[in-house]
Length: 92
Image (cartoon, rainbow, N blue to C red):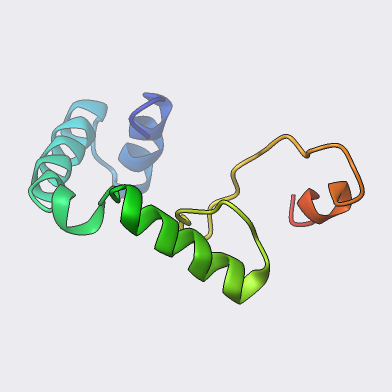
């Protein structure tokens, strides 16, 4: 919703408030969540990254993964070769 101001109209309509009030509320929520940024979003160092890659590979034979976003579909370009079909997203 930060990338698209139309979201504010949807929220305003759903809650029967104006765009300015919706914008103010979203801003307050953003500032509240920002305080927890380093608690919930972390970036690993090189050593930890290798351990995470090994863990993902051990669980699902998925190489070179260092993180996952819950329920988020992220498009990637499938590599050419015999494993190309392994990278097809069947949920879209």
